[in-house]
Image (tube, rainbow over all chains, first blue to last red; front, side):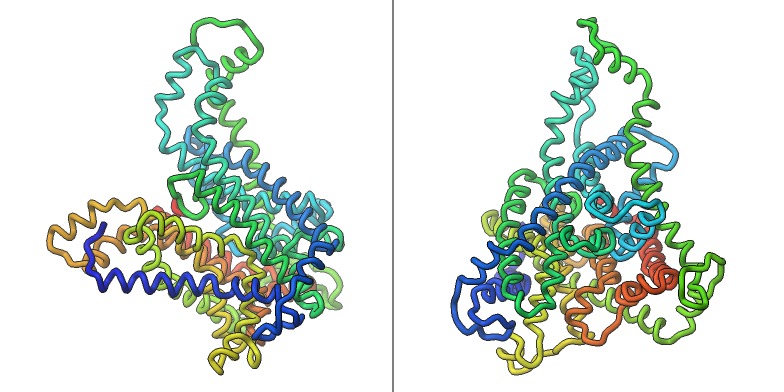
Length: 270
Length: 291
């Protein structure tokens, strides 16, 4: 541990406490308001009730949106896993013309603002005649999810010793056996971490979604449903409930991702 | 390299065929990602860029595909749009600096001071807000900042209300975890022995912090800034929720998207150019591996 005196450590501790409180305060407010008897956002809450939670569970719109979000996130994650893994193997194992630019292009979809990606894909989809719906949404989401899988897998590949695969092939395994019994098990936790992160990114995405999902109401994702209902006063408490529920459920993947990957990469390569 | 002869199966044959031909393997791996990212993504960005040189027909119906720089003239000549662009870049810089100042000490505390049990707890405490819905957080700030009647107003008797300061606060809040995580990861990779060595050589805590920790963390800090900067520059939803009348690049692009796509495309090239210059500038620091 770095040498530091008691005062310095106390200072860092206090700063951390303040910042964590800052991070959690708005989330706590939403959770509290989801039990408020009054339907308005006014503070302080008027009383305690569970009625919004019962109403939210019966809300078809929210449930359909949840299903749509899950479908999109699963589709985008699967595509991202395939493309991201292939790209990381290509960049790590081979030297080819355009390798450096390719690794920059992979980063672009999360380095450029979502609205840029959104309008670019929207006009491209319309040009090639792909109607905006579940398919276009999954394609768009996969585009920015690829990089998180790519970063996770390539970070792992860089740490792997090439000797392991050589040993496997010396012992007579063919390429598929080597991948299945040697390489894949070593990559598994990186793939899971990348997949979880891709899932989370897709599940919460709203900007690219706005531009690449059909305008039909039955096709809304959960963030779209939340956005549409934010402006309607009577739906406000139900939005609070949905938001709180999503937050509670997000604890599961966060916890899982931490258990799965002892080591920490960057944000996209967590 | 071929192993000892085993039973001849189709798989073995394919494997032998492939292992002798690295070019075929590379093509197999590269086709998918290249088609997706280069043809689809880069292609649509380039198409968008080309669109920015078109303009609307005189009668406002449809797009005239005659190349011209009208949109860029409008962008540069009208003070409204120039102000919007400069304001957006200014907000993005401010948000990035605020997040650096907030994130550096907390990341340091988590990685180097906290006990392991507290560390796990704190990492979760930072990551859950990252996963919690963007909209919900922006919307919670609407409830917090409202004036009169918001939580802050009720508690402290005053509130910044909705406007430019609220935009900065909310964006800094929203993107803070994106800054903490890479800095924490960078610190986690920084061996304690380096800090001890600095201390053994007589450097005090702050001297070590300034001349060892911060320089070695630079790639991680820059990686975090890519997120905070880019996300701030494109945002329009949080801006609409808490910004009052404030306009940012994102809001102008969003408002013009349906009615005047070429102009929206021209304005969208501003953040694209800024980000590409930024990415090329930081490529040497190794920050992109820290994303």
